Image (tube, rainbow, N blue to C red; front, side, top):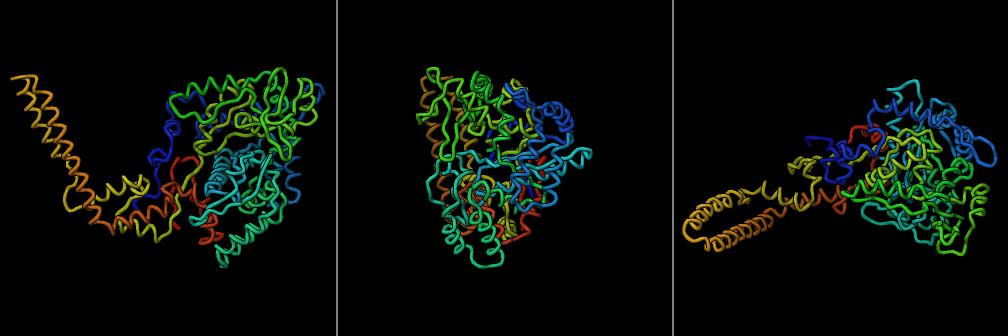
Length: 540
């Protein structure tokens, strides 16, 4: 194959907004702080160092909270029963120091990691910390995986795909998914185990699933174990924001949202600037949820009362502020407030996410400015297509480039049919000759009787349409003639782009671990370059 990468913009899989962001179009530059280049991190470090150094002052108590001390204490507690690598321990301890900063990615608690891009997000984060350490050796950089433990859309995370088959965890769920019991997943594992066989790598996959999901009581602990087992040796630090001590740091911002709803007009104003694109999220008047173990519902303000949607729970202003002071863990930020929460409690420089995530972060810049919190650098996570040597050789034999394979299937087949045909199927030359002849007819019509112009136009359209139909019939006939080779092309593209979609959004990592075992992640870490904005093609 002639190339091992393709730019995000040329891949055809990124939205116009993301393409324009990656091209640093001027109309978007007011919506982010700094574009992700190694050089831009210097100013980001200095800004965050000042912004994060001031302690949080809790009203009414007169006490100040050192955010770094709280962060380290919480992480140490969350890692108490986790087999922690030396590098991860060092990273947690280093967060106490003012010269240590984080690079963060976040992801839902998808069953067994969900789609393959879960790995790419975390690897992008790990690799960026390595590049930053080389560029700025006097600082420390810690890779963070933020578990979305407070999400409640269980239907989005309760399955994964393996070799085209969907493995689904059937159960009811209410409240934050991180608190959800893993009961019943032993039966799920039995079914999955039958599918993957009994090879050495298959047994390793089964043990990984068992250690994570059968030996832990809730989905948050299970996901932490899984991510730590895969990436702990690289120093990854996993954080669960569903925590009273961390949310205590966020009390002033929750209070502002409850009393003044300041995020709503600011995000709406920014969304208006993005009206030429697809707006990713729309703000609520209050962008907070109320949570308990089996409950996560929006907080709404109606008739002078703060009410929990779809329940009979309600509070006066005094009551809800008292609840906030005593039990901040009962307040959960939604998609608008969660990024602010993350940046308040972490000494974070950069957020790494997919195109959809970066799109909604772009709506938040003015909100961050109003809250006096440094807006992070936004980096589009790595993307990749994993192929075998056999698939790469087959593509070469079929004279397919990666650009060909990234194209829509109908375009690919039409293009290859025309390329492989023994005679030209494209009748553009004939159409051009025909149109030149009609130019002469138009001149004659103008000179004799202009009433003939309509008849000339109709005849021209009829004959062009006739050539179009002939071209379609020729193409169809050639497709029948070239059926064998075209089917091989379709089969190969379907292997690499299942359901004519991105492999990373369909397949689970276990499918590739089954073939490559412990080599999988080291190879991905070696190949993925977070700042290059390329879709990597990795051949195993």
